[in-house]
Length: 111
Image (cartoon, rainbow, N blue to C red; front, side, top):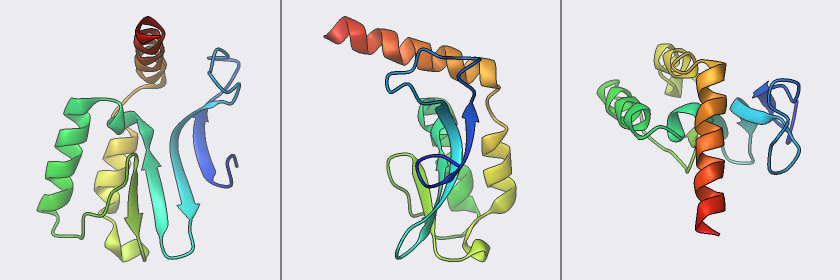
């Protein structure tokens, strides 16, 4: 549990250099007032994975209700569970950490 959600995260022992000193969140499940949300940080940091996810999701015929890094749903049947599982499995932890490092480096250069 982290940030009030069930989280799958990169342990600080693996990558301690985070901007907020918290483990990197890879995926999470949250319960909000009017909906639930599954956060898929890995696919949202990779434009190609993000586009593939969106196209695959829309092909399922299920309602596509997304935020910046989450998919909102009201009941479990609203989610294409095989696609969610594939998306969580789409990026290895080492690749996720390397992409995060790259994003951090680009932010520093802009400052």
